[in-house]
Length: 137
Image 1: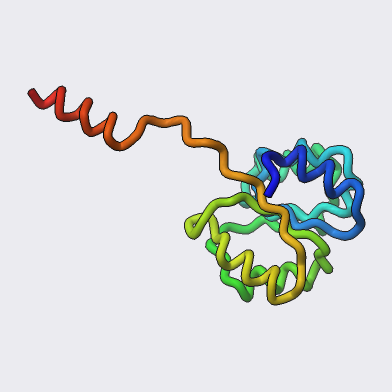
Image 2: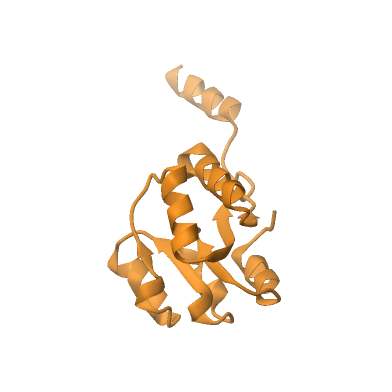
C-alpha cells in the first residue's frame, strides 16, 4: 500500500507495462512523468475528466470513460483488453468496487498498487452525538 498517487507513479516509473488507473481524474497530474502511452485511466465520462487526460497527452484510445459500479468480469475485460501489467486503485472498500477490482487482478495475476485512504479528518460519532444532544436541551 502506498500513500499517494505520486508515490505510485514514482514506483511504476521504474517498471514496465501498461497501467490501469482507477483512481479518478483528480490525481492524473501525478502521472505526468510517465509515458502517456502506458496510462489507461478509467474516468467518469465528463468534460473535466477528459480534459485532465488530454492535458497529459493520454491517447484517446487509452481513455476508459465510463461510470460504475463495475463487476469483476468488467474489470477482468479491461485488464485483458489493454494488456494491463499494473492496476492502481484507491482503498475505497466495497462502495469503491475494491473487492471486484482485487478479484479481477488476482484472477489474472495482475499486481495491484493500492493507495491508502487518508486519515479521517472529521469528528467522532460520539462528539457529533454529544453536540446534537446539547442543542436539543
